[in-house]
Image (cartoon, rainbow, N blue to C red; front, top):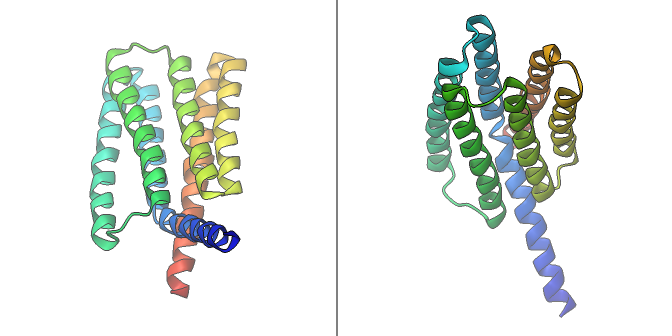
Length: 191
């Protein structure tokens, strides 16, 4: 019986490692969405009107992500239970952020600080869930970065919100995305 349990635990470990390797491919998506959010932030600041900036930037990011995801599916057809869990976490977070950014930005329903808090919290949630599933301690630090930025937005002067969010995006999407791209590059070089 212990041998069967050991075999199942070994299989779970292999599936988790495989999902982590597959996840490193998505570094480009972190960079893309980070760039889209920063573009929308600067566009909003320059025009003082998020009604067009966020829906436009997020729609472009969504279209590019769908194209990239289709390319990935063509390249790698099988999904493990762990990779399906990661897909579920990021799909839910992505759809939630897309709805928030396109409808919230268009309608002006959100105060800018509340909007920033929601975006930062959702990023933290998705990174935390992904880190726990994949057992990536570094991604736990990414989740903490998003959540600390949310706390900073809530506890500092409203004028600081813009730069806190930009910094969180640069660290949470930019640095993390670049790290994943480097992992993928190394994995391909070894393979």
